[in-house]
Amino acid sequence: MSYTPHEYLKKVLLSPVYDVAVHSDLVRLNKLSSQLENDIFLKREDQQPVKSFKLRGAYNKLSGLTQAQLDAGVVAASAGNHAQGVAYSAKRKGINATIVMPDTTPDIKVDAVRSFGGAHVNVVLHGSNFDQANEEAIRLATDEGMTLIPPFDDEDVIVGQGTIGRELLEQNPHLDTLFIAVGGGGLAAGVAYYLKQLKPELTIIAVESEDSACLQAALEAGHPVTLPSVGIFADGVAVKRMGEHTFALCQQYIDDVITVNSDEICAAIKDIFDDTRVIAEPAGALSVAGIRKYVAQHDTQGRVMGGILCGANINFHTLRYVSERCELGEQKEAVFSVTIPEKKGAFKAFCQALGGRVITEFNYRFSRDENAQIFVGIKLREGLQEFQVLHEQLHGLGYQPIDLTNNEMAKLHVRYMVGGRPPHQLRERIYRFEFPEHPGALMKFLNTLGEHWNITLFHYRNHGAAEGLVLAGFEVDAEQELSLLTHLDELGYVYLDETANPAYQSFLSHPA
Ligand SMILES: Cc1ncc(COP(=O)(O)O)c(C=O)c1O
Image 1: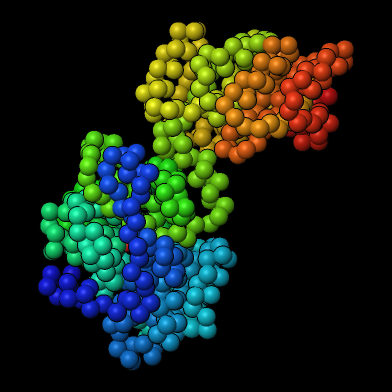
Image 2: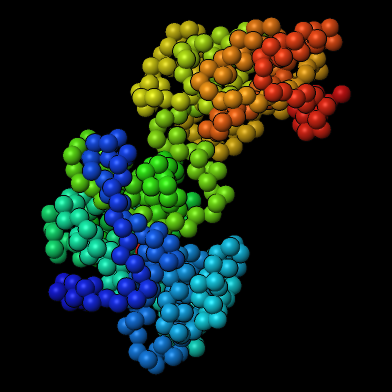
């Protein structure tokens, strides 16, 4: 960075970002604060017109260009928040912007950029990944005389992001620890450079996604390095290589780096939602994930901590994954597999062995006459140590649970694939049940039905909805069927006979 600390402070203080950006709120996360026993504040960058902080850097950069440069237009490569920041800023400045996006970019993102930029923005779809789009943007800049607006590694972009530091200090001068998400490092560099001049005793922790930890890799190597690949769940920070300027500043001003995994990010999205009703995008929730992890690792209490909700541009359908994973990230759910005898009542006996704990998931399909392999999820009230206790209890009762809580393949795929066709013809009836979800509802089900018939198929997942849904199969012959129906009626749950359902016939029944 060529700006001296004095020049940098001046640049931040005089930055014109407020032509387009708002002073975002700094809100206290009351629930999380009492849960973690620290005072936790969150800077709401989702309040920016483009729903992320990226507008600040882009607009500040544009504001420093000469009239001739503005007249020639600007170009940027991005499929994400930077593209929206540049598009919005270009429109406000009344200049032309070309945004190069990989041609694999979902329409929803292309449309968002077009709607922010209007007639001022020309979207060019080029190449199949970010690197190829970036090369095209560089070519356009060179050949057509446009100014390239980099997403992070640029002094004036860094200044723009630094304005968040200024607001933070004004809004809460008592902050003692600040957590900042890192992609290419523009946000962290900008905020840290500003704050460390004015409050050097403030601890600044960078938070990276485990699968795109390019700052951590650069710090270990002593210079930016290119990661061979990056995970894209937290797409806002999926950057393979830190910038040169951003690295130099982070190396000097960041006190520590913490990495978090996808489950921990999902848990942080839920933490933010629980306190604010705002849905952060994965990168936007990184700092809160970092706070949770830091507090657990350092056992800190009574500190005044800050995080930045740096973006809220999430694809709605991603929420299904987020909700699936957040309990695991909070260490409130364990999943495991266990073998039980294939006989009447064994299922119920196993549920009893769980000692009244809430079952979040139960997947099972008949495969052999002697033993049944079950995929189970349970809610943990006291974190993972409770799982240890349960593990020992189950061992004591002769079960041998295999812990799958950290097994990605199990959580992403196998849980949905448990089952298939039985090895031989079964006299089975398949029913789909709906019942009011409450603790003990599943046990009621098993108490009424589980001892009378051999259960040959079971699929249950607690989604936190008011209705519990179960698909179950029972081994019954024609004579027993009437008595099964009587029991089903006694249960009082809504049910539907699905034995003739073609989905069952095609995938789950034994081929005749
Ligand atoms: C929501 C969000 N968070 C964090 C970042 C990371 O910012 P930086 O690349 O400046 O580290 C980005 C970058 O686009 C982002 O969109």
